Length: 109
Image (tube, rainbow, N blue to C red):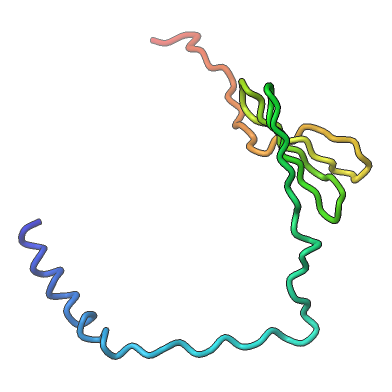
């Protein structure tokens, strides 16, 4: 490693010499016509409700509840999602766990 260090420093010397030649980047062009600006109504509103037994985070877009994250006092958090938009919430497996089938050694020789 001691032998490579001077070689690495020598190889980086031309890069340091070019640092003084940096020029500013060109300005960012404006967005194309017809492209809408940021819409605040599409940004989700998050309401946090804390209780002794759980904490709920309710996610809404345009006032409509579409997802709830429930974090119980004991245990992992889980999500309830309204997939159809009909008010029926089902548990969503956001972080799907890999399937681990049981494996036993039946015979070895």
